[in-house]
Amino acid sequence: MISECSLAVRTYECDSYGHVNNANYLNYLEYARYEFLKTVDFDYPALIEAGFGVYIARIEIDYKKSAVTDDRLTIRSWPIKKGAASGIIVQEIKRGDELIAAAKVTWALVNSRGIPAKIPPRWDKPGLGPETN
Image 1 (tube, rainbow, N blue to C red):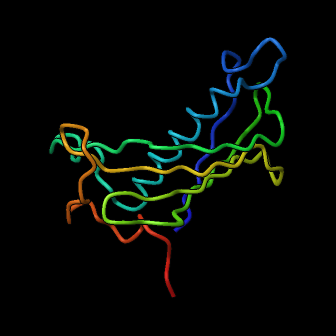
Image 2 (spheres, rainbow, N blue to C red):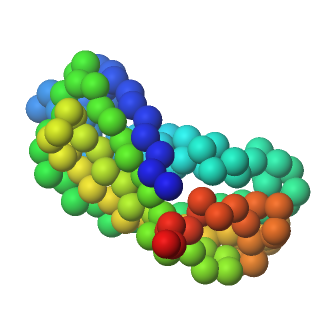
């Protein structure tokens, strides 16, 4: 399952060099992961209401090119691994066919005390893991 969303770079996301500040890519990736969850029918607000959360344990980002104000970026997200309480999602940020940044995001489901917990059946969606043939 590959989820895709897009956004336009806003002026306030750029630094004094005129390109997107590296920290703003984290916001882009987070937005795209939330869109990914909606694509796989993962009800994140209900998960929070039930006392769980999804924490990011690790993010690796490779910055390839700079993005600037008004660039239209597309962010693709897809899972490559899923365990009982965690998983890994790969994300790419592109401007057209040009790769701007690539990320590998490790997440974990936690209970109300912030302790890793097995994904409850209601939220254990097939799309959270890589497709198998």
